[in-house]
Length: 119
Image 1: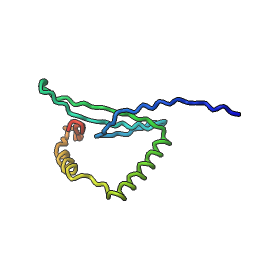
Image 2: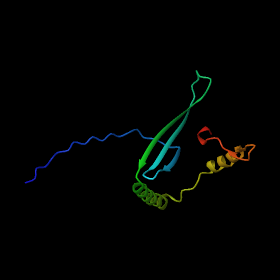
Image 3: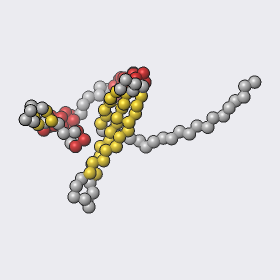
Image 4: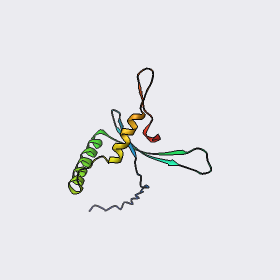
C-alpha cells in the first residue's frame, strides 16, 4: 500500500498594488509585464517635490501570456455584460486633448513628449 506523504505549503501574499501605467515587452522566450505606480510626494520641509515610482514586473512564457489574454478577454466581456461598456472617462479625454497641445517639435522635425509620469 502506498504511503501518503504530507506536504507543508507556505503562501506569502504581497501588498496590494495599484498600477497607473503598464508596459509590455517581449523577448523570444518571455513576455515582460511592467506595472507601475506613480505617486507624487510633497514634503513641506523640502523645496522640491519627489516622484515615487514603484514597479512590479511579471515575466511569463509566451504560452502563458496567450492564456492571460484569453482569461482577461473573458473577464472583461463578463464585466461589460453586467455593468455596461467600459469607456474612456471624459476627464481623461480632456486631459489627452490638453496633453497634445504640450507636444513640442524639435528643430529636426522630431516630436518630443515628456513621460506621462511627469504629468
